[in-house]
Image 1 (cartoon, rainbow, N blue to C red):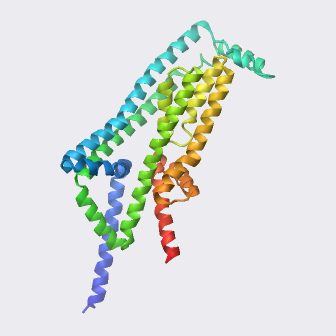
Image 2 (image 1 turned 120 degrees about the vertical axis):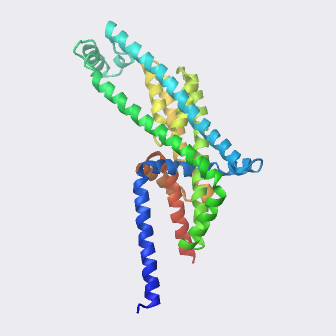
Image 3 (image 1 turned 45 degrees about the vertical axis):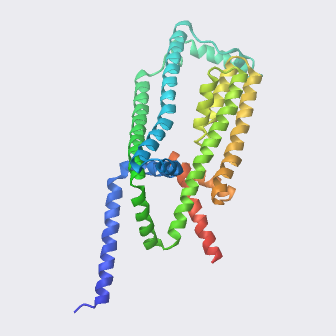
Length: 343
């Protein structure tokens, strides 16, 4: 007859093996939807205080619908504006291309005025860009079409992921009480009492990251928007907003003010171009290396260097989602380290 203790141990091992197998199968099955689930979790944590405030005045379903709609407007409205502006600029580029093909292209005056090599570069550009066998005439329409199809497919996939994330956010909010209770019970059974505390640290890291993104985005949009307007760059408000949006991605905001500087150079406004480039580089450097880590680390007592490493390594490993996952993972790890060191 089998020992009851060994039978219980075998049953426990079987349950663990079956549970891990089912979890692996579920993760494999939901691989396509894991980004949407991760984004939904980040958005839910970030807007949780707002949901709690709205729920006090209405029911959970109404509050969930209201906050989900607010998130949708906050995310989709800038996206729609960017698409409209991009379409308008694309038409302008196409018209410019047609005019250049008809009338020929001449290198801007500022290129010829560069010391030592300016004249040689201008002569080379004029010789190649005006030749029928030059750069413009060699554009492969089929390659451009394929490039546009790939970008369109990626954009459609991202929009679908966002829509699924919004749907998941609604149900997370609506069932939040049940989900929180279940997470507390399961976390305590698996990891003991520190589980709730570590979850709070991860949530604080996500909220701190969101606060940092908002503050830096608004600040960079305002400062560089003023710089664009003073330097004479067209559409300064649009470019300022675009700079603020791209500030969420490390090293992406410089693309805007570098492009503005290049446009100023083509208009022979060399001093304004240098000023915009220098001012934009200073603002982005201070924001990314000092302001953002201070805002994120201040909420969870995470040292500056770990916040910076969490942001950069998270983006490299997980893409844009790593902006939130990187600091959260390091915050939990540093908290565990501190507890072990103290006790």
